[in-house]
Length: 116
Image 1 (cartoon, rainbow, N blue to C red):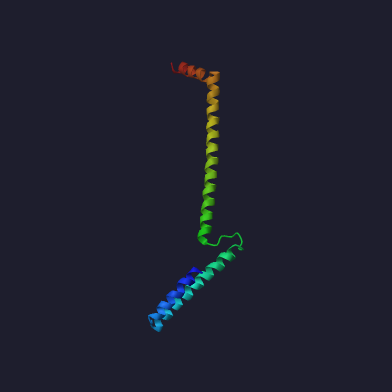
Image 2: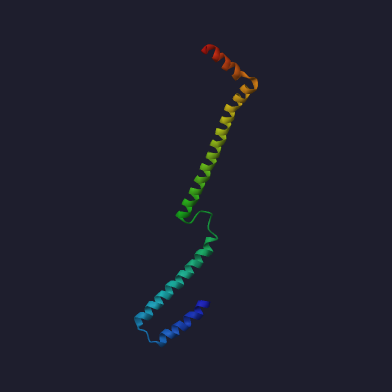
């Protein structure tokens, strides 16, 4: 609505300057193209709210796929860390048991007897 108030004085000023017909046609074509662009944008905005949940852009689809892959790799990395930690715990538990039972001391003593 505000642009219409700006366009009318502009058109009156142009007509007062006596522009050539060619220049007037260029301005009219530009005005029509701008108006059609505005109407198409409005129609797209209204129709988009009724569209399905599918992505509209190929770029948006790629972005969503990239984020999904990043989440999957992060989950795999966490699972690998858990597996590594559990494997490390399995290795350290027998060492703790050896230390508690003193089994490593007797094995060391047996080695010394054979070495001498």
